[in-house]
Length: 133
Image (tube, rainbow, N blue to C red):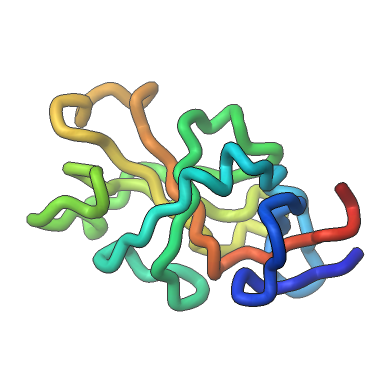
């Protein structure tokens, strides 16, 4: 394995893995199509590492391995977070249960349908395996 941090990542192909010691679980494969969804979100919930950039994942089933918390009322803010009207869940590693490494929420008008959650994976709270492609 050749593990690098986001700031050291060259290109847009890698396996995104859990950053916590002793885990290294595979979370999702970084492909050019996923890399193209990168957004800068300044008012996101606090992550495991200070985070500004997030990858938008459309469906929970796109992940190879992820844990999603129950609704956390403390996450709800008065202003939108990115393009989300309501943030209410955190993403964690489903192998070691540590995190958060991302968050999930709803766009305006979809706040009651859990099938319409949108997922944001913190670029800075995970590591990248550039060898095991």
